[in-house]
Amino acid sequence: MLLAPSSVDSPKIPLVVDLDGTLLRSDLLVESFAGCLSESPLAAVRALFALRRGKEQMKSILAHAAQIDPSSLPYDADVLATIEEARNQGCPVYLASAGHARFVEAVASHLGLFDGWFASDESINLAGSEKARVLEKEFGKGGFDYIGNDRADLAVWQSARNRIAIRLSPRVTKLLTAIDADAVILSQGHSNWKSWLKLLRVHQYVKNVLVFVPLMTSHTFEAHALVMALAAFVSFSLCASAVYVLNDLIDIQADRTHPSKSKRPLAAGTVPILQAGLVAPLLLVISFGLAALVLPSLFVLVLASYLALTTAYTFSLKRKMLVDVVVLAMLYTVRVIAGGAAVGVDVSEWLLAFSMFLFTSLALVKRFIELLGCVDANRPGPANRNYQAGDVNIVAALAAASGFNAVTVLALYISSDAVQALYVHPQWLWLICPIMIYWIARVLLMAQRRLLDDDPIVFAMKDRNSLVAGLLILLITAAATF
Image 1 (cartoon, rainbow, N blue to C red):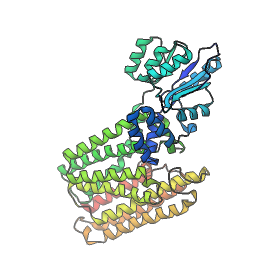
Image 2: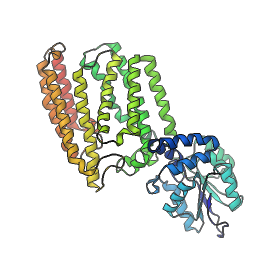
Image 3: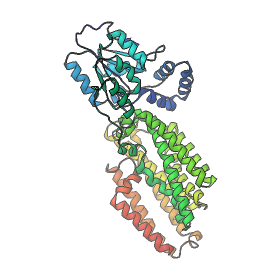
């Protein structure tokens, strides 16, 4: 529990710093549990059962099952500055955390800023009043200054001489100022709405526009059908946001080593990890509640299938070479199927085939971009994918082949008898084929030139040429229809 001198020889009052939520803009207990769910699910289950014997037993199992890289953790700049200031004044500095000793030691050793550390072990959960007791025993009541961030730190603040806080909730701020009106609050640091929108991937909702495709291709232009499609869009968007949060929880360690994904809110610590873990199931409840109340039962079944498939992708399938690409394409295609279920129309085999080829191509483009990043950084491959940097050329070739196969399917559809019943001037549809060829080739060339981010669909929504191509396709489809 303690790695520190048994007595403090320095005449200066020591500074004691909390870890989770204070020095770190994250929580290693939640991180280690999420990591175990992905890497060692049995360990995560054992940890939950061990909670019956005490929180310290749960922490012990997770600490030995999960790995952390202390060099990639999101440290708080204000707290680090306070530590440096104390050290410059000759004050000893200690790290005191309810986290397991294995994690606390790793952080303390990496930073090299501490004269000692206190942590939980298999027998003691060093939180709240227990932490206050240990620190008071070591330094005496009022014999240390303390930096914390949560309600559990109130007991420690009562034993401290000076009280310093960061990222407090309004309720805890009120309780702390009742103890000490002169308590120092470094920063409130509440997550802003932009960080939450980024975490929920609201910009990715454009993908859920696919639920409107069956309504458009079947020419079902009725008010009721439009309302059903809108409800499907909202339900799918909320479900997708919940899955994005879960994915970021599971991938948090890998994201921190990625040049762009390290800026995601959980990896960067701009959204509290515990709050994110609570928001995800809430979004799922709202999503399925809306679907069950408004939409047909078949849509609910498709939505549940999407959730099951994307969860399997998050925990396992994304680490399997090419399986991940096929699953991503299926997840896009499921959106089309869900749109048909919502408005009560059958999705044609032509549309399903076109969707699978097109979205397989886009999924391969995503991997192509990742591999180009690995090549440029001289890395062997993505941290959590079963690809190597040397695969970059074949992945690009597969992306081009799948994309042009989608155009072939479109051409065969246009020449089929099915088109004659739906379009007044079906010959106009042939103009879509060269536009699709242009757009697919452009996406690959832009990726090769390192001008795409990691998602070609998001790129298309910002790219002028892509927007013009999309507008032309809509105009051509309208001209063919009326």
